[in-house]
Image (cartoon, rainbow, N blue to C red; front, side, top):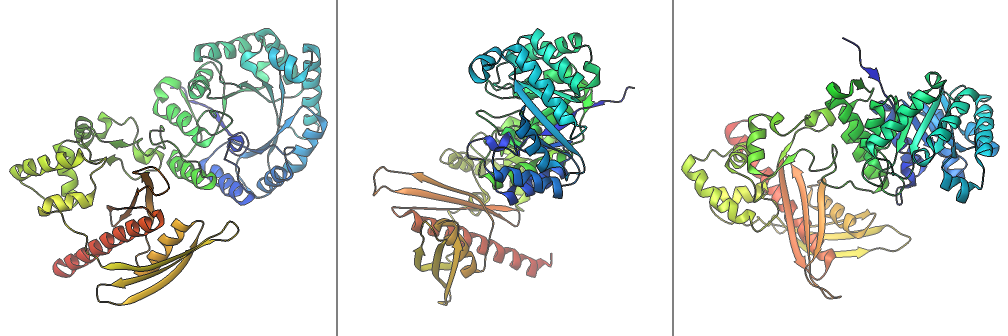
Length: 517
């Protein structure tokens, strides 16, 4: 059996990805992401565009100095100043790559560059040769290749390889190509570029029509052996090909693609989440591979299938991408099998008759809210709307914040024995400060998994609902509060969930004392 061919993963999260509006990262954030990408196993890490700014230059230089593993690449236009600036940033890397680019499509030649075809070829050749004098590993990209005349594109690529380019990247810069069309273009270059065997064919696809991953995979099928992509698919406009989707498509359908990568897929979700934390850009819930719903099931028929055999509705396992387990979300579409399974996990064992009675109540509740949580199930099983024990009561709260200073919250709580506790904490905003201060005062410092505000009425005096969620001891707890003052409502919701958690912890401690386990 023939061994699968290796597809190189060229990650450009820190260069093209950072160009996504709102995705700018500081030096420490870039270094942290670069180390995570190295651990993920990317082959080439494009650290930035050194000529763009002093900050970008410093980031590329520090990554070149301090991050081991992948080849470190820097981008440069086909200009002498760009190329030397990029090399100055890269030269301390154990393995460095200069990535030079020049637009080739008719629209770019006329409106952006005002250059004839002959000048484009000359500039590309000169720049590749200049880069090769500095480093052996040179990549050349004809920008907007997908909209370039195929015969002219073949000419530019052939001349760039002749000048010393070891990788030729074929970008679909504006996400215009269709998969079959893009595969045909790669096939055309393989057939019409006489020295194509002397370079690796790479592709860099944008997602303007939602086809970046499809186009990249089509190109791999046509012979491309490097794919340029980003974590979470971030990048200019609609973004780039998503690294996690590409890699898992190659891994999951190895039977179809016949290639593999060097990526440690168990680090995909942690790396995705780190990028979200670093940039503040969240991924949509239904995002493939790393979205919150990627391994979540609510429909009863799906839940039953997953309980019997996860392969019924999961073509990869959560562990494959770095998750502990899938999630059976209990909602109005859920069935008896999922309800019984979660009740068993909460140590309830209802008879078939009891389950039928509980299921009716469960469905009624599920029609009124998006998701039925563990607290709700406990209430259903006790046969009453269990009131949260008010272990802690909010006595007073003072907030202080400004545009140039951190927000501070001072909290005064009273416990059920009448003891008064005061604590203060700072945060990036008043909500975070409130949450931290409440955690300190109550002694139940928790990790928040969800925080949402929903407006219930319009106007300056309008009412809103605050909803918070945390996970503790394998159970999820949610607190809600409604009011005109969103800071007070946030404090009430936080305190509500703190009381739930403390109560649950006390109940578990009592069980351990009684049963010794």
